[in-house]
Length: 162
Image (cartoon, rainbow, N blue to C red):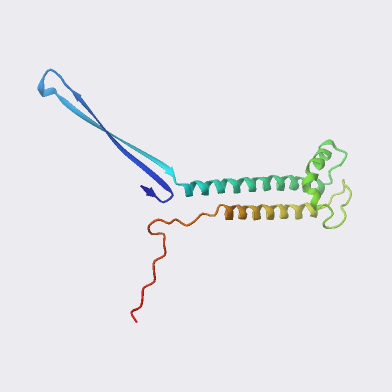
């Protein structure tokens, strides 16, 4: 049986146990009916789940990049000392992500001066835009064909009798 996005397998098993005693009035017969139902997603549902998993992974990567750039914005905005070990480590760690956007809004001010790093803001927007485009392409790649079962076709329009 198919129920929406699931395939349901039902099974009924009957087990009969006879108990014999020495006295005929006490002779009993019991029947146990065991019902087993397994719900298995159909291939269309499995494909949809895979697509969602891939899209979530894409957005997770975009979120990690955005958090890294946001921390960079905070450090630059607070004027973190570039000679400090952590600030130096973090600027070095985040630079490969930031590099394509460096100087996009003009020359970078020196490190240690409190400034809003607009290039990082642009980078966050562009990375999220790329993630959205890739996620949309994935949904097109995983495009689910319309079911061809009973009831999935459009009804024919009524014919006029002219």
